[in-house]
Length: 376
Image 1 (cartoon, rainbow, N blue to C red):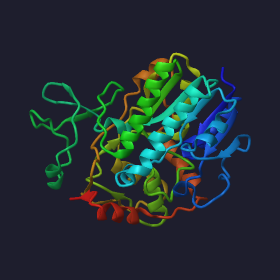
Image 2: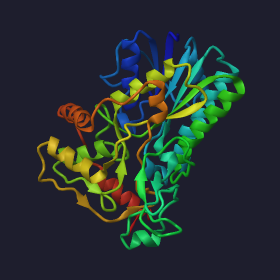
Image 3: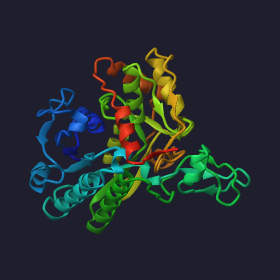
Image 4: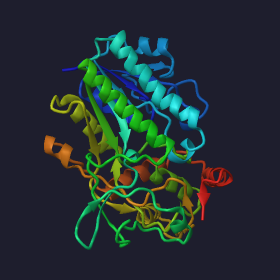
């Protein structure tokens, strides 16, 4: 059993919840975080919510000396440090790739060459690496894995995914880990790199590693002033400021929204389970929810049902239609998500009552528009 765990990005949204759970279960925890201003604002000290029993070290995953010092004496690493946000990654290419891909390479290089005492590594991957999810062709039940929808189709406001052979509308089905990967953003490519570097190096050096493919995570501590974070937080920021949620396409696109409490429970389960090794695992609920339904539920829970979502019917470059997860693989090991969407969102809304939310969504939208990444 591991005794001391390093959590990179441990002052962030998911990382800080992971820190809490590890400490609750008796682990000694060190946090390594650079306090990214886009997430934390301009601050020199960790956020108040960070567990006081954790040792905090400020540093950047690209800084070899600082990271090596943070690795001293730890048995396991939970690697959550990353630049997050699909849209922003499409134009901050070097920054995202440097932090996500190079930062992970730096961590692996240290573990293999200088910090051999590390026994276990969990890396945060993402459902974004799938691109479009899995689909069924209604006419014969065949499972197909389409690529991006043609831009001329989206310009006609036809947002459905059509079979390339029969042209019929395909039906979304749960996406398993075996689906071929098809990245549609720089962020997705970074996550694919992080996952594959980790598994390749783990296999070559007999290092025990697991890739955790997060689906759409929401919950307390998610930044409400970062317009590139998850949909739930972005919509909530709009609603708290009296503005309608801004939705691309027609709002009928579906995702798999999972509470952060479920995410960290799954990660600890995988960290402690020796049967999980050298493989990726979906961490998801298996339940599809449309973006429009999510926005309306958040408005209802805030008592602002008058804020009907603004459905733009425009589209962003690289956006997919449907993707929700197949949790069968992790379920077979013995873990299953337990928190319903409404229960989890109630927690998020209750927490948000005492948190400042600066609505920067329109600013982010204009930035994407000016760069030609919002079309239609």
